[in-house]
Image 1 (cartoon, rainbow, N blue to C red):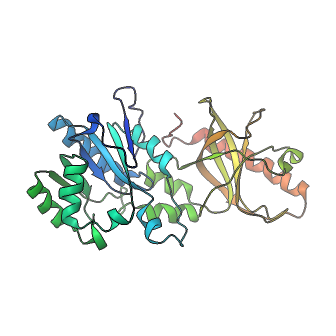
Image 2: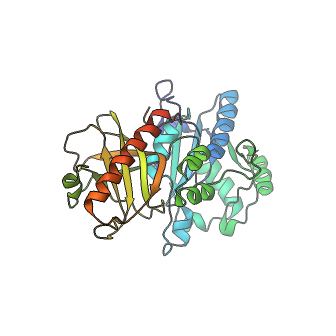
Length: 328
C-alpha cells in the first residue's frame, strides 16, 4: 500500500483492546485481516472498503488483531513481523480510513464459531454494517468459516460482504503476500520487498547504549535492538526519522559484528552529517537498499576503508531512490 498523508483531511480514530467501539466508528464497513506489512495487496482491501463506505455514507475502518494469531497459537516459535502494532497504526492513519479497530486475539476469540463470529461479534459487538476481506479469508474456530460461508452469514445478518481478488505486481502471476516480503528481506532483497510493500520497509526502536566502538572508527552509530528480525545481516542505505520529525540520510549495519565480538544481532545506524545525543530516543529507520553482506575484516583499518566505500554507495542509492516513504 502506497502511503499518502490523508490525516489532515479526515480525523483518524483508534479503538484498541477491549475499548467499546466509539460512536464515530459505529456502523462502519471494515477491511478485516492480520495486515502484517500493510502491503499492496492490503491496499486493495483498503481501496475497496473506502469505495463501499463512501458510497453508503458509512465510516471506513480496518479491523485487525493483537497478538498476531500465529503468535497466539505458536508462542514457542518466534515470528518475524513486518509491522508491529505502532507501525501498523502509522500506515493505516495515512491511508484515508476513518479508523482502526484492534481487537485482542485470545482463547475466547479463537474459540468463537463462524456463526457467532459474524452475528454476535461483527454485527452486535462491533456494530459493523459490512466487511471487505481477501478471497482466501478464513475465520472462526479452527478456521471453519470459508469465504462462501462468510457471504451467506453476512446476508443473513444484514451485512454487506465483498471479496477482493489477489494482487500481483505487473508481469508476475503470484499474489503479493507477507511471507514473500519476509523472504525477500531475509535474502537482503530490500528493493524487492519495498516493491511488494509499496513503500520503504521500516523499523522503529529506541536508541540504546553500546560499546561506542563506532566513535573510535569515525562512524558513531545509534544502536537499536530488533526483536525476532530475520533481515539479512549486512550493510544498508537508510533514511532515519528523528523525534523532532526531521529526516536524515545514513548507512546502517545489521548483524553480529564479526570483526570484533560476533555478539547478538544489532542495528547500528550512522547518520550522515549529524552530531547529537540520541540515547533513549525513538527512531524510525527506513531501508532503501542493500549494499553488501556482513563481512569479517582482518583489521580495523580495513573495516574503515570499506565503511568509507559503503557510505559513498549509500549516498548514491539515497539520491536516486523514489520509493514512497512514511517519513515524507
